[in-house]
Amino acid sequence: MSHRSRLAGFIIDCRTDDLDAAADFWSRALGVSIADRDAGDDSAEYQQFGDTPGDLHIEVQKVAHESRVHLDIEADDIDAEAARLEALGAKKIAFVKRWWVMEAPTGQRFCVVRMKHPERGTPPTQWDD
Image (cartoon, rainbow, N blue to C red; front, side):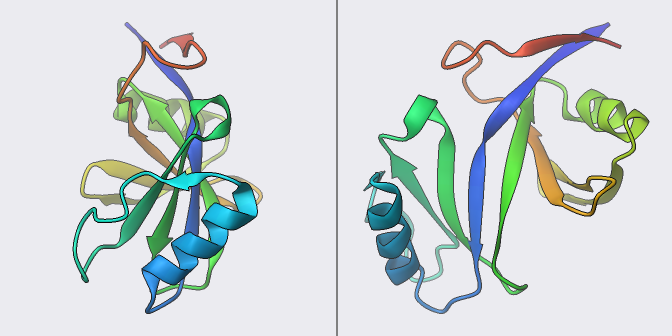
């Protein structure tokens, strides 16, 4: 069996109490719009950007850990993709809600998430399992 994956985008993790202010900063810094200013409520943990280069998914995420940037890899089979990445030397850190948090051999954290729109953007790479 085979599966497909590709870079989905970047998540800007912000340890902040003011997600809107963080989204405003990064929106202006990157020259992109905030997709839906009214998405969620005061407990919202994400703010997604629109008009991003290459249709990449870019969002600001409210977190409890130190601020950092991480990338997401999207796959049509997240378990197969996590196994492929483990074979390359990555390790699984945790399964959170619907995705794998992983760590590269060099220490960077990243997530393997479910592919949302395979027909958009760069075609995914087909991997033979």
